[in-house]
Length: 356
Image 1 (cartoon, rainbow, N blue to C red):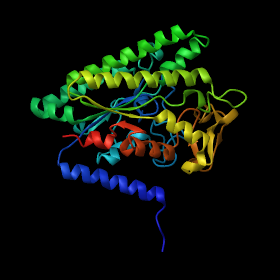
Image 2 (cartoon, one colour):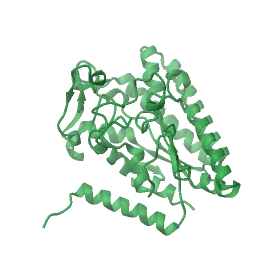
Image 3 (cartoon, rainbow, N blue to C red):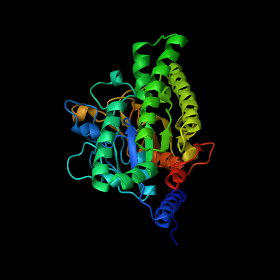
């Protein structure tokens, strides 16, 4: 008799748990997503004169069978979180046409930073916040004050942001002193804190973060000898420490504020260094691209240039020079959803969605 793979069994188990949570509680919970290319479902497709939109082959080649604007061969982390929470696939906020705002939406934009100056041509975090305020207004008009307040307070707000700020900083100041680095870190964290406090004022209480990944160990950032770029790694670690401290302080000072941090950095480093442990063959090289580790030019400048493409993305942690395959994204989402406290804490997203 045929048997299901352990990974498929785990996926089905998690999905059943999510459905039981939603059915037992009988309360609709929304998901609002903020971030960069790791979480962008295609918002950049609707921006003018943007090349970073993943709207060309081979992005989307597996699950969707066509490019959607996601920087992966298939689904990204928020897609799986929505599935586990019993929600439909969240639309990009900028996608024309009808939206069911009571399910939430996704504001993330590839290339975005916490700071506007990191990439002025895309949707920085504070602009994403303004878009959320637009949705808040619609919800209050459609549902009334009381029901909108309930939906906003029970919703989960999921973030993946900051990496591009540090890529930009390192590019501009590769030899920055520790004091300059800490000053920049303070600016990033300060602006991020302002956004979280604004969401809290609007009614948000459940905050989820995927912390900064291994910025210096992406295929595109590796050194000529194959090592990681340590200064980028240091920036990621400093950011993650500051983020953890900031969220802890917010929980101590804001009544009802609860948060979740998935230790994406640690998880990703382990996948890169020991890929076989997680069902991968390749942890350092990407499935798609050119050059060392296939670290650049996935898609060959929209098909006008030659590039290499692997036969099976599931064997790779990385799909391109800086973004994970669907297989790796699913694993990250499973840890975000139901990981133990040393991986995702002090709450995981399943617990945040389960809050009364």
